Image (cartoon, rainbow, N blue to C red; front, top):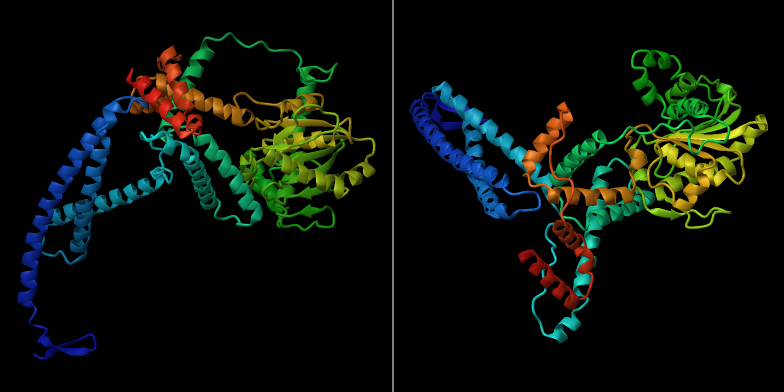
Length: 567
């Protein structure tokens, strides 16, 4: 007595009545704690055995020979079932360790806490891994047609093609959802939705005829890198020419490179303060800090994206030009609309147009819009096509320069100057297309494109631009070689080399990582496929086209493939 008052009311128990209930609960909890550890050990033993079996089976066979791994789905099901008791034990452990553990063995409590924390970490990473490897297109797989009367097959001859059409539509929707999730910070307006749809169709068509997972691609790239290094070691040194094949007559390579180096500083300056700070990490911030917040709106015209003036200040520092030398500076950035500036280069007596390269997520979407777009040019015969995203970006700049009178303003100040266009990466591609659009109006213009994207122009336009577009590519730069035909060729080469390699994937990845990090001699593996493997790969690679035929034809082709595999 008296009755204990808690939670705002009196209860029928006194404060000295908790000795026996507390002691009983403490005894029970110590016994349960030991039982929990025994159960935990049993669950962990089963999990360890299943993981050992998974590791052993997964290491068998090769990338294209999954036969020795046919028992893997059953092991995955077993491991998934073991997640249930593991989750229950993790929850029980979390409840027990959250209560007062006084009187318990500290070592036992510490073991429980460690086991609970480890279990929850493993469950968390497992959930994240499932999200990453989940394939929304994993369910719809075309099934081989069964034997049916000829009349039924005739009535259902379009069923296979309808199924493939549905699967392709689903693939496009899945890629659109992935792009929207990746670009969730961008406004979901009509232009962005159109870009997402275009890129999704490109990605879905590229990956539709293969069954490679990301680790297969990584292994194939590792093998290809080592194969290329072996070929380079056995190749004769390249011959250095004294003149660039596309250089104007009478000018040597050194003079042309000097002009290109001069234009490169303007192309690099178009990136604004990020590249300037990266190039000058110690002095850059100090040089820009005094100019970033200074207002000079009356001295030049700036459009969009440079509220503090840091971009323009970095351009001034990089180029060495004066405020009065700039005609127009635009940092406006949207899909198919990229920043550029127009300035007077008195040293080379040129009106210079510099276009910025990829620096934002919107620029990446412009890069990935790699479909062909018609670009008719007067006086050019043949198919005239260009990269869709870059073509639209160049058209945007063209309208600004011509329709807004920016070039007229520049040449009214310096009528004797010539027009020079330059850019790097995405800016190089836009500069090249822009030069083609302006060529008829400015016959003497020159374009210096630094690492322009591959697959930029059709052959007719590429031949037409040889006289006034000079491309500069440094070493093994990826961007100038990144085109849809090259990606298709890379895909075929990956399929060939992983099909021809007789090593398990884990060994390829481990040796590839070691080679990339520490170098050494390339791994010794076959580089050419024998005739039978080449024929089999060709049959598998054209399966997508075969399945678009009628169901009757599909049945006989399927029967042929089965017979071919069994033989």
